[in-house]
Length: 71
Image (cartoon, rainbow, N blue to C red; front, side):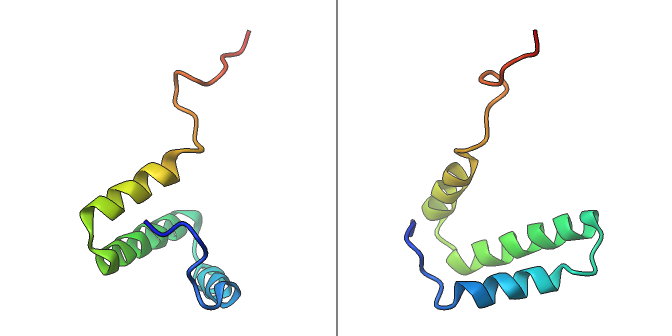
């Protein structure tokens, strides 16, 4: 899994990503993002790399057991 910056022009990519979603509703935006993830995953195609990416993307989100419950 590549974790160092690897996009030739990240600002242009981000601008295109934002522009592609400008007129979408929140639900359409979520569907767009899901489609994009699946297309990019297909481009990668390596199962172990995809699973590593899923793990890495999930790391910063708390699990229900680690969340602090209100007093």
